[in-house]
Image (tube, rainbow, N blue to C red):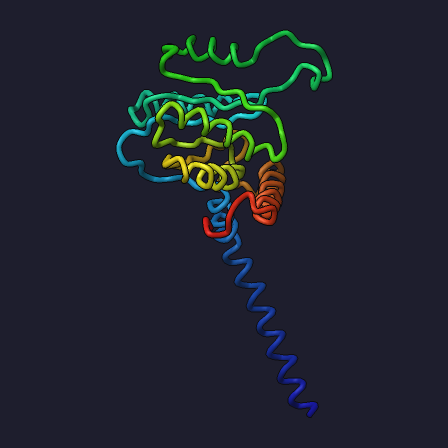
Length: 221
């Protein structure tokens, strides 16, 4: 009996040691795969997309704007759509008079874009924020006759955003192509950067919450 117990203990130790060795050996590969899952990017878009959607928050990053302008100038999209969260003045810690949406329009025109080549959509901040924002944006795009869109979102937020847009756009017959944009950390090295680790953990947690709350159906995975 003791001999059998020793054999079992030895086998468990071997399996544990092997698992540790494999996890260390393939650590980078596994972390890169995890990051790629959280930040999907389509490699090819058939034809020219009707729009490229830049999913901002209260603001939109320079990196996302550059990505959108590049897609427009290269002929991969016909128009840029920037989605922003509409912040009420009484929600700001200090009074402000600037209209950020107007500032974005002015900035895009300063880059040489014609007013007809872009649209700025401001959606209300209401929980669940990503779902509310996507629903508001897609309603506008559907009325405009949009049938295909390249969705540009930041880093690991891309997976949740893509699934939400994909779910809501299906009844509207709008095809969504994801394109993750990395401004603050790199996909191939995110685990070595504090902001990359924080973003991964936060976005993975929010993705689980969206699935549990049925905002995203499991069949999309």
